[in-house]
Length: 287
Image 1 (tube, rainbow, N blue to C red):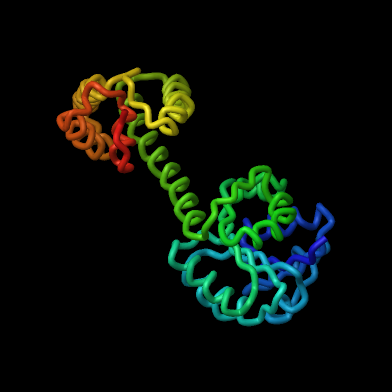
Image 2: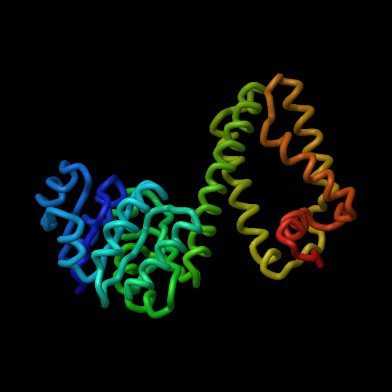
């Protein structure tokens, strides 16, 4: 098994290191603050005095940092310059597409393999090895890293490129943000209207699931044959906005969505399925 270095021992990085230890990997660790290093040393990890020492000691380096600035200072300026072929650097931090590309270019010049591999999932899933991992980079690097990645995630989806990995991770987290804000808005309205909270939570949560499950194949097939028309959705959104106003609740999410739906309906898509809105926005021609 690979000797793996983990750089960046926040909650996710520490959970990843612990998971690898339970699976029998030799794990070296480094962090800017010493407390997480000491905790993992107690679990069997090997503390390294410096980043350079860690990179030289291991076969693969997993980096889990906060963002672009940290990756620039740690991965770009320290990890990659210290690496020599056939080292493998796996950047699991959530970064911008351009930063992943910068790191990949630097790694290529150094002659080492590089993957962007952001993850979806929580700290408990990281500790169990049940994350969703989105690796992108060369196929050679992915094939080399795959057994290690499969120790970290129950789902490993090769995206092809480092920028694709970035867009998929950021897109998934955008869904989280939009859903959270939409739920906040809907629960405020329903509670102001006297709807039981449990009933509202279960109903709205079910609605998100129904949309995701029922529209996947239509999106893949570029199919906008009407099941629920955009005109019908527009009518109901207008009713929803009036209902929210009646209980004096602001609707910032709905106020953003409603003009887009109205514009699409007026452009000639009104009789198509409401999923035509997503197809049009993505540059597809709804069928």
